[in-house]
Image (tube, rainbow, N blue to C red; front, side, top):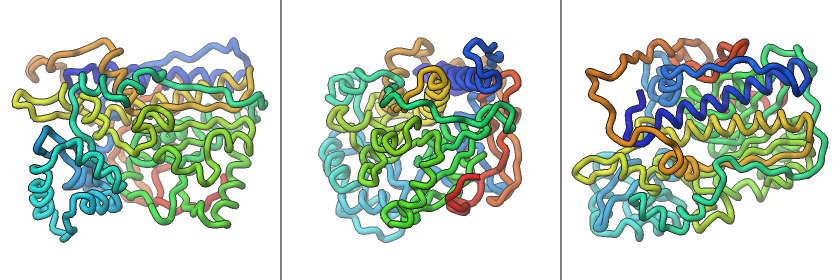
Length: 444
């Protein structure tokens, strides 16, 4: 399960265990209202964890496997080393091709060949900067040593794995009385402004506990139905144009009753709408703001404010080299473990902040970064450093034991069950994913 040279299994187990414990503590406090409440027992099932960490690969929509990586999202040989690109979204694809001077003919096979020809004559680091300047996504593949010496790698290593900050002395926001809902998080209202995997995994976990999670997307940048089919369990989804007066008014009305706001866009991208942690707390004292970034966030090294994805962080941080083949070709982790692991840590941090608020109050800010999770995996976790045992001596593992089927607006879904479990905890989500943007922007 999750075979790798780096301790991916240990990362997966640890992040799920921490999240389950935080959920159990929050639930115990919600039921009794006492700091001395007995915390339910927490269990970590390795099969459930391994299956959940590749949930997007197990997903089937009416029997169809969703598309994952686009043809231009891959490793490329350059004139000096390897390069990793990410072009799953149409606007990222367009910016990548523009930076490389390659016209989009719509023929993916021909485009791959054309891009390969261009990249073969240029150096990886030079392409990295050119594509970034165009708003695209590409990073040079670096060794662990090169990343440790890079200003961004150095800055990230100084960060805590989970950053927490008290923003003020506001009292904790009131939650519904114990027993007023079906789960420990019943009555908890979460605004979800995240995309792709890490942030949606965190909010999917909060939804598992019964929270009313409302995902907000721009009508100009809607999420794909396939991605939402994996991470949209338990949530509702609405579209709001924050650049419009009516959209901002609707958001402020939602914020006025929210307990948690989770953001996962490029650092600083939402600040122009007054959605920085400090401004949110100023308008909603007592709120918990959770911020997710790829590289550490503003002020953290030269890349802190850049966009990024799990695959790019693996490439830049040395993971791709550590997991590469004997011929020097870069490799990947057996799962998008930085995304999934950071998602469970983010959910845990939110729950711990809410629990601590009961006694100590204060608006809270929580910050995590995929690159810091990568540093933890490479340098701080103890575990496997060699290839896995041969298949014939590896313990049997059948992911079917941790898959379920659910019908809903998107069709019949085969999906992974949640690995977050504790005695008396929820056994599943209260609702299947709906259509992206298909709900009204109001609290239930």
